[in-house]
Amino acid sequence: MNTCVSHFMILSNELRALKSNKRAVLEPAVIMLAPFAPHLAEELWHRLGHETTVCDAEWPVLNEEFLKTDTIVYPVQINGKHRGNIEIAVSATPAEVEAFAMQQEFVRRNLEGVVVKKFIVIPGRIVNIVV
Image (cartoon, rainbow, N blue to C red; front, side, top):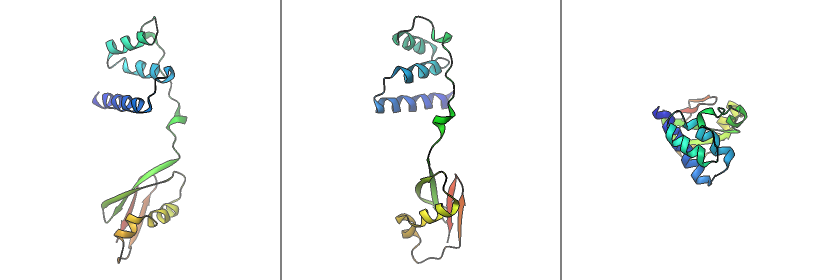
């Protein structure tokens, strides 16, 4: 329950930051809010101009297309300590991730005067450099 409420707060903050008041966004949000805050959702539903109850509304359908992303953020660790993050294309190979990471200022600064023993890239998860 707490996780759901937290995500509703994140949604609320994002919509406020975008100054979004589009019905196509608000109606599904109100429908999803209904099981957690039925009285509030009912009030919002009627303010959106509906005559029926929010409980009769059709539940939003997941569209996986909106979950896809073009980039991924890799945390970069040097000797097990987080030193920074890099953002790179999801389709990048481990060799490309390694090359991109080695170009970063924070990586070069932390590797001055040391020899890299091992460079570990776990695709989609983390970059770990052992010196």
